[in-house]
Length: 325
Image (cartoon, rainbow, N blue to C red):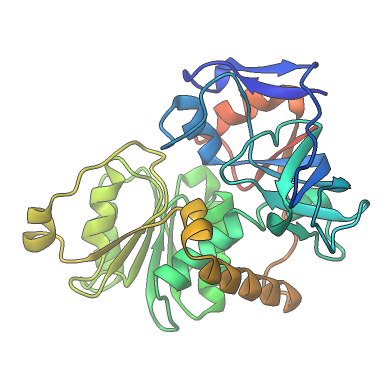
C-alpha cells in the first residue's frame, strides 16, 4: 500500500512516500480501516523532530489519527462491522498516513450522522483535548476568563467554541492574518506581541485570567504564567510548539503563584480512562446539541504530506489539516 514513511529525526522534510508498505492485519480487539482521511497534528512534528517523549525511531509509518471505513475486525470485536465509518486514534501507535491502518476497537468511534469522514477528524484528538483542558483539568466555569494560545489552530478553535458555550470570557491569541476565524472570541490578541501578559492584565483590570491554555511554549510560557490570576489561576500546558521553557520552584513561590497542570491526551486515556470516557460522553452530547459542528479541514494529497507538515511547523496554516490517501 501507499504510505508516508519518516526516515530520520530531522523533521518532516524526510517524510517519504513509499508504495510497498505491507497492509496491516487487525489483531484481537483491533479493527482495520480503509483510510479516507488522516489528521495532521503537532505531535506528528514532535515525532519527526525526535522531541516526542518515547516517540518512534525511524524508519516508521507516520500519523496516528485517521477516519475511514472498517474493512476487517479482529477477535473479540463487537459493534463495529465491516462497512462502518469510524474516526479514531492510535495514540501510542502509528500508520495513519497510509491507505490502511489498524486501530484499537475501543478508540474507533462512529462518524456522526451527516458528517463526512474528513469532517470528523479532530473529534478524537483536538476536541477532547480542548474540552479536557478547559473543564476536566482547567475547571472552567461560567463567568470566568480564559486565555487561549494558538487559538486559530484546530484545538484552539474548538476551545474558543467550547469556552463560549460554557459562559466564559475568551481572550484568543493568534497571528493577525488568522484573526478572521476568531470572531467568536471576546478579545483577540496578536500572538507575536512582545507584551501579551501586559495586554491581558489591561483587559482584566490588572487581575489576570482564571485559566490559560498554554500550547505555545518557548518565551510565551512566561507570558502565560504572568497572565494568570495569583493563587487561583490555572495554566494547563498542553503543548510546546515554540520550544521548551523552564520553571523553578523558587519562581512558583516568589514570582508566579499559580497552578501549573501538565496535559497529554495519550496519558489521560491510559491513566484515567474514566475521565476520558466522561469527556467523550460530554463531547457527543455537544455534537447532538449542535454546539460542535462538522469540521472543515484543509485537505492535502498524501504525497504532499511533507509540505503540509512544513506549513504547520511554519505557523502558516489555520484550523485542521488532513491528508487524503
